Amino acid sequence: MIVNLRDQLSGFFWLGISVFVCLESYQSDIGSFHSPGPGFFPFWGGIVLGAFAILLLAKTWLEKREGIKLLDLWRGKEWGKVILVLGSLLIYAILLPRLGYLLTTFGLLILLFCVKDRQRLLAQGVSALITVLASYVVFYVWLKVPLPRGILGF
Image 1 (cartoon, rainbow, N blue to C red):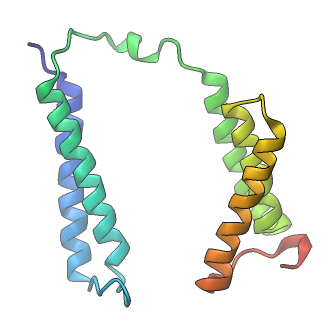
Image 2 (image 1 turned 60 degrees about the vertical axis):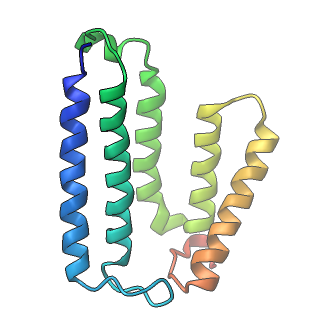
């Protein structure tokens, strides 16, 4: 049995990062679910990261693998989609203050949904609209997070 050394090393690396994040966030007051402190989200993020690292380590120990060459990891990837998504995120960051949260996020979601599956444009539009409106209600209305207003004014 050949264990994938890269997966093992990355699993231990991320497990170490998660332990560090949990310890540091614990020192800066986690608080409670109803009254979270500044360390609440980093602590639980570290817990989730640690769980994924443990899953990766368990997978590498339980799985038999043949040696994989580095070039084989990059073959068959859709690099055009990767570049399109990264470019769209850059454009999103530039346009967000100018056009506002609702319009810019709706456009980004339409683009991302189209990158994933180009067949159902109407369903993608409805999904993007529901997602944008739901996130607007959660963050702007309920949590009172100020979002960029842009040209629409809300």
